[in-house]
Image (tube, rainbow, N blue to C red):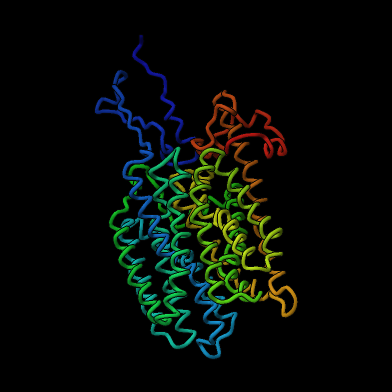
Length: 489
């Protein structure tokens, strides 16, 4: 024995393009005698607990989503009421359509600032700022008398509050889980579906019995109480995993896989927003009552509440990219084969609940899929860019759908076709992302001299060109083979 040790595998960590070890890897920490050949090494494993207090964070995220995205989902009920009663004299249908999308786009637009505040002041500060802004928005909306005031309150201010709460909570759950990441994320995001179900029905009832003003005030009080409690319970693991909280990391745009991720999000949101806000109004356009329209919107959210945990469970088993692409395609297929022909209350209820199970697949899987594309450390930076890119589709999707309406015949036919094609385009992006992921696994397998089947896709950290000098000499399988090969990715 000469006292020398072979380099630990962790020494190769820098080769994966990150500034530190990937989550779940072993970091070697040298003791005081590190300069001596026989110094002992201490290994620290920063591995997510895959449970424990993480479930408290899941429940807290669930209720935050219910009282942000869930409340925002009830805008379809407000929209139907505004259009039917000329609530703001002189306001056009197009102006009302912008408000629902505006709240979502502003939530995404504020994400870089929210990410910066999270880095400097912490997650809890970001969440509490969101609580204050959302409460202010809902209460102030109850005192509006002109459409521009509604733009500022229910549109911009509510969107800012929702954005702070969303950015502060969206990256928490993946930090606590590995094998159960899809399930945990699915449960957390299901809150938006359940919240949408409850508040679509409750909002319609409150408007009928108490008026629009008190409907806003009650929503504001409830949101404040629940979100404050959840903000105090949530804990992040940013320090434990060395998370990079940069608002923009422009180097991500050099990665083709990340561009495909952006394309998937862009097209998914174009379809999702139209479904979310158009279904109640579509119901009234085929002769159903406003109450039936609100029930249709509620059933869509019920489908999301039921479907998102299932998407999470099966994505852990079948592969996150695989299931995200499949469910996105199914959403478009349902629009073509069911929605276009839905002319009765029963068929529309069936469509709402079945399409709801897959319509929000993006929100369920974006964090787990994003982690596989860029890694957990760079996930906050990647998500910040994703949210900014989604500003355009979330702002203009519903106005585009309203402009596509026809005055005679099937009023929403063009909007329905548009929605279906958006989901299909998003699914195509996921197909190419699958091709990339399988190729990445082949590269890692070649570098480690293993078989591709021995590489776990979920734990495989993204690699850059510097990390695959050996693998680059190995021929990869064809694009078609990587597209159709049976592989959990």
